[in-house]
Length: 519
Ligand code: XMP
Image (cartoon, rainbow, N blue to C red; front, side, top):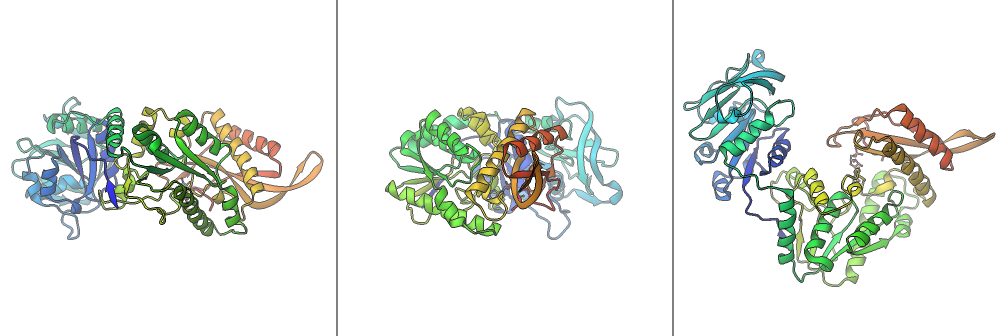
């Protein structure tokens, strides 16, 4: 099976990754300047390969090590003679000094952490910014003596060489982090590197990407039968519309409705893709099939496994009806590719992120139209393609859907109750215009029943939990401090409008120790 990447003749900058926590942020900051950046682990690319690819510039990331540690990542010093401009950041800066025989020192009393005033000398790297500004530092080691041929171009009270350069070789090194927003003129530093030093033109624009990708696939996939599993999530939706614009009805999208979606979600997906875009969409209403398999199951991991497997089976059954398929489309995005730790080596993201690849459908190749894009770029492409705003900015929704939000056994009745409560909560968040304040918010139907009173009668109903979290990456999350009056309105409406619910609680646990989902 052949895998097609999105090849291009774009100008590119390489972010050479030495294990820094900000590697993706650096690449995104470069792309914000309309220059395409790609991240490669330092040990997965040689100087020869770098030269052959023709990068316009290289950025060495930070990293947790000290250059003198035996286990610390090093690189071939020949890179400094490759004739390609280099910018080293933090550990990357020290590595440049080390490679070129400068002197690095480690001293607790010289360490700097946080916002720091730094002063600059004349340098192309610091064009169009004041001589004194705030930068973000996070280091113990520092460059004590720059290597021969290098000049100090910035310093702080504690750090005699906060930045250095060899202008002739176009090699620059900064001890601070230009990529974080705490560095006042960080954007300007990167801009200066890209445009003054690397001579980039800034041709990485979303409208170009969309146009080029449509053109490329309309040629490459002409006459081929292409299949895509559409979940209604951002990635598969954008991939679907891109491919649809390229090949029209040769693309078939299969939307497996497992009956575990939120209120009216299935209809919305169908209306958008078949109605608005006129796509060749097959909606499979498989609720009974899934609920049948889930009957009596209470263990969260078993629920996930059953749903993943059943999803593949339903998808396969539909695909088989279509006859020979040439191409399967995957919604893999750039962080999936890098997080595999393999740079550009391929990762197969399961098309429903709970299952795997179908095994009984045969196809000749996989196409991943979004594999070069970060999530915010996928969203920008979605907007460019005219996908509705509410879909492009949709909050994350787990593949197993409401199955992991109904605690204990799943029944149709419980799903209905949860859907209604969840819809009210989301409506109240929208009414209060809080969608931008919290990153994910939903209701959970607990398996706890409690006594209540409605009118004069005693009731014995379900307890619903509301959850809202604030997070950058979903690896850690804070519970969102929603205003009490919003919680009050949601609680009052849920207990009034949804039968069987007698109690509403708000989850005030962060992650860790809790996870975002309850199961
Ligand atoms: P947790 O619960 O692990 O969730 O803190 C972190 C993020 O991942 C989502 N999530 C899932 N997404 N399949 C998915 O596609 C799953 O099985 C799954 N479990 C959790 C969750 O909604 C949150 O955004």
